[in-house]
Amino acid sequence: MMFSNDSPFLNIPQVLDARQALYIDGLRHAAQIADLAYRRLCSGLTEHVFSYCRNETPSEFTYLYLDAWAFIDATDRFRSLWKMQPGTKSMPAQYAPATVQEKLEGIRQLRNVSAHIAQKIDQIVSLKSSVLGSLSWVTAVSHTPLVVKTCFIRPGVMPAKVSDQLAMPAGRVDFVNESGWITMNAGKHKVVLSEAYTVLVELVSYAEQALSAAFSDPTFETKRPADMFGMAELDTGKHDY
Image (cartoon, rainbow, N blue to C red; front, side, top):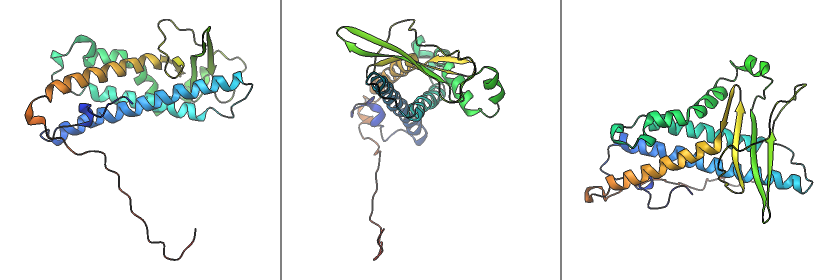
């Protein structure tokens, strides 16, 4: 879970106006979806590797791409909201919207590929790429001794020559659920999703600290209610399903 129960993102003060509250809520939801999608993607990729190690062949990759593209979409939404906030001149340089825009530019480009796939189909064909893009990553299958597998997935029809490559980490690998250095190659763009996830975690941590300090005054003590679930039983008469 990215947010603890006492996170300011989950305890928005009542005195904030509706626009401010909705803005913070938007950041929260984008971060939560991105976090869930990334962690689930890591788990799915790890299970995929272990399935092959057991000489089992998974039947499809769909669920992996569901999470990969959900992460890309939610992270880009977070980026677009982050640049809207006021008072950015007082921010540390590494959290300033311009810096974040630069760090997550690859995510924005990937998002544009998926959003305009019909218009980019000729480009995808000329690049001999996959409609869904290709994923590469590394998975630690053993810690003692350390054994790491490097893998890639290219879904869909194969061209005469496949140019997709195995993951070759160029820096520190932060393993989540035993997988890391997850990279998406789509269209003309190749982006390390794991690096984008690290940026997202750092931004959320900074935002929580800043909001906690801002909400420390007693006037912010009363919190807005949030996250409602409703349920009722339908009258089905004497009908059976």
